[in-house]
Image (cartoon, rainbow, N blue to C red):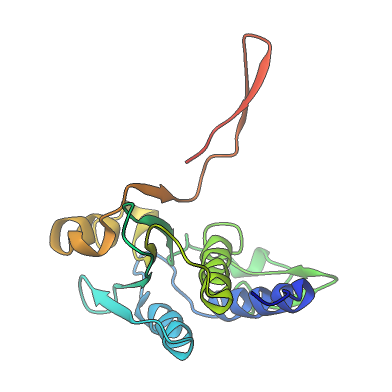
Length: 190
């Protein structure tokens, strides 16, 4: 393994997120296929096979797999590409501009959920670039339609292409909430 230049990683993941924000995937109607295609191109340039699967025209999901030795069932890194509607006139910066201003990246989806998509993509790329040998496959899936129920996204994939998402574990958005129970602070994991 080579030493990782974390500043370079930060710059790269910021660039990936900025690019993702520029895709207007407001749901409804969604139109996630261009963003899914962008991610597939990034993954393919790195040497991974990536598949864009549409549940309907424009409702694209992208799935890729980093192969482990198969001794354990896969881990799924799951996120979504669609965003809730935006009232652009109430924003200081273009919600689909992907601009970095004063050290902050502005745009619809930065927090929910294109930020996670970029993070999980970067994780996968680092594993690949470092040649990390794993006991399990890592599946990357960025899906359509989470904001209105997932029927054109993850639910469609589970019903129609379950082999793409078959995993023992899944890391998804959510979790991280702190709760106090019996005097102890607990954090959810989802």
